[in-house]
Length: 104
Image (cartoon, rainbow, N blue to C red; front, side, top):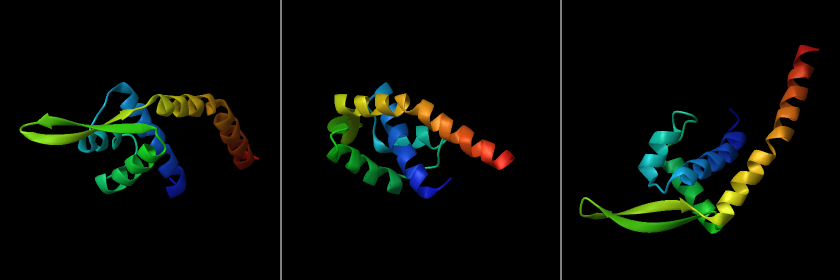
């Protein structure tokens, strides 16, 4: 997969995962990497960008005597995720066009 396309898709995958429940970095990587390859070194800059866009917010919670940083989706993040899903029809039309041009 093209790296720019992958980068954009990762943001939506992260938002979708966080829409299910708040989570921390390692857990996000573990659960998303089966769908699209991701490492922690790729994840954290994306989370930082999503945080600066007000799509996710953080909170700390104690786990085994240490504070763990959690991420949760914001209402703005849910709007972005919904808009992405609404654009799915347009993406499928583009895919069909490209596929048709390859079979001609």
